[in-house]
Length: 121
Image (cartoon, rainbow, N blue to C red; front, side, top):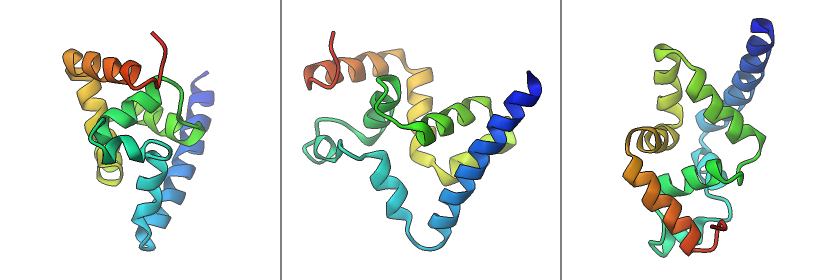
């Protein structure tokens, strides 16, 4: 069982390293744009904040495998590795902190998602 977890962690870290290579090569917009894919208009109009988009996409199944794996990695990472992930993906770290430590924030976020028709009641 523990070996299976390590295989999954290594697989996700491989994907993370590929994204980090893109970021180091001077294309940081690639990651940011893909996180908000299909939701940019909500941010531009002021309907949702970037953190709200990230959590809505995660909680309601809009993300594909990479971002789901990345968020799972944030949850499993020890403190040192979480700091490394935070440096590379600060918007995800901030979003997860809001989600986990501010229940009222998540309630407002969820209400907005329903109001905007992104999810059912």
